[in-house]
Length: 134
Image (cartoon, rainbow, N blue to C red; front, top):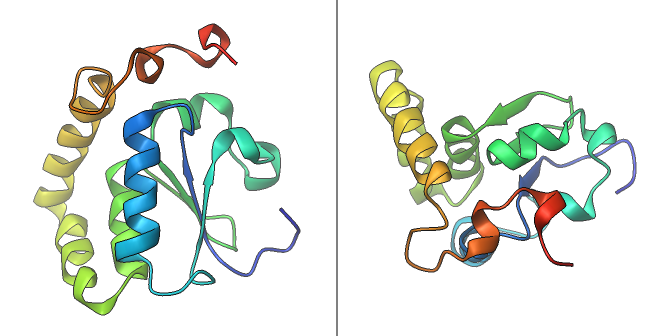
């Protein structure tokens, strides 16, 4: 990835089947154009350049603006929706509402903690990167 960036970056866990599937859905259905924002697995990025740590990307989806502002988890989902096709933006705006945002954060944390048990999840989704098979 070259600096400076002109588009936001959506950072997901490329070892997680659910995360990979959802990132494809974002690319195909939510993002308007390829140059609106970059979608990349954290394993393929220079995290230091993005201002992220490995722990942050293991814990949650990350959205990094060209200015370096970071949104995580449910806030990253809202940012993706706000940057997508116009018909997704109301959903992103609703997620940003104070009480909805708190609920969305709880739901996001539950999904993230249980992603290996959800449909499409695999054991690799739950294992720390150091334990994952290459």
